[in-house]
Amino acid sequence: MYAAALHLAAIWNVKAKSWVEGRKNWQNKIELWKSADKKKYNPPAALPEAAAAKTIWMHCASLGEFEQGRPLLEALKTQWPGCKIVLTFFSPSGYEIRKHYEGADLVMYLPMDGAANAAAFVETINPSLVLWVKYEYWHYYLSALKKRKIPVLLISGIFRETQPFFAWYGSFWKNMLTCFHHLFVQTKASQELLRQIDFSANSTVAGDTRFDRVIAIAGSHEAIASQVKQFCANRPVIVAGSSWEEDEEELMHYTRTHPNVKFIIAPHETGKERIVDLQKEFPGSLLYSSFISKPFEESPVSNVLIVDNVGTLARLYKYATIAYVGGGFNQSGIHNILEAAVYGKPVIFGPVYEKFAEARDLVEAGGAFSIENALELEALLSKLLENEEELSEAGRISEAYVRSHQGATASIMNYIQINRLLIS
Image 1: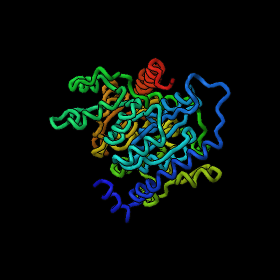
Image 2: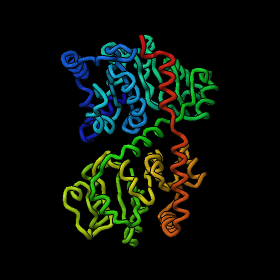
Image 3: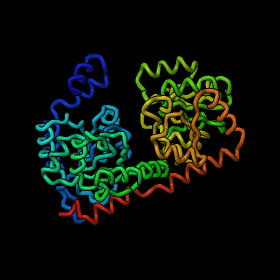
Image 4: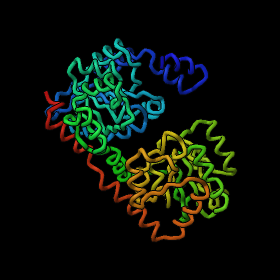
């Protein structure tokens, strides 16, 4: 039913079309990869204990889950360089951005969940270890893996009492949890929910691998266009990341009344129509792609820079004086605040954040702030920018929080090694 709806939507929706087109002839894609791999593959001279032929499969719903699982995937590749990596995505927003990810041997859409698809996919790639990141529970895939006795690990899982696992009708969902070799969850609250349905013995509170990922990004010192630093020009800088229309409405007035403050706006969606709309909302604004392609002008006419690409935001946060993270005026809630907090930046977001533990923690600690409307946002921005001590303390709290929560990747790696999941 879901697939049928997407096929219909594909007639006019670009993302739905990508979802449908990307899943066509998936068997051929795997066979081409396997045949090409046989021709080019030369195993390293000295491999660790694992055999060179083993395959690790990581599945992610979208881009955020990929970034969450990435530290573990790369740690496994470092420990067992002879292993093959298969990476699958459910959504176009993940696949289209990471389809050329060099850390994987094969990147593709997950074929639609069904008995025949799942059995054929699992048999063809024949994984030795499967990593399922955060959520998405596909019955036929998990059943096929369980039938073949292939270990499946849930990475950075999060459970909430509103999920069907914990409802009176949840037996179908609970049965899928039996397919996991182990459940690595983010919080004690998640483990407690699992205890209530007799699954806690098969779980570990490892934390969230996103902390490890943002720390790695911050420490990589990956270069960014020099024009960005020149644009900031030692002025206060507000970086608005993963913003939605509602977020930009809250910021709009402040950008016009504070010309000495610089604004870098990186919207959640970067399609052509969305960028055109943003340029209308912020007249005279600079467009990132064209701005960095030219020599820097000493006095740009605008204090607003609109980022029209994907993959730059996590590195742009380091230029912020204050970070604003979008999504807090949407039902789904805020985006990743850790990408900003790791750089020691105070973080501001809208009112919908309660389901995110890191947001609750940082608001309580004083490293993050929630606002209800534009008036509150403007008052808060002015207060922080005018009080260097408070600004600095909020940033210190944010960074310390992130640093204190690293280690989930090491915990999961330790489990894999102790249980010899990649050793014959």
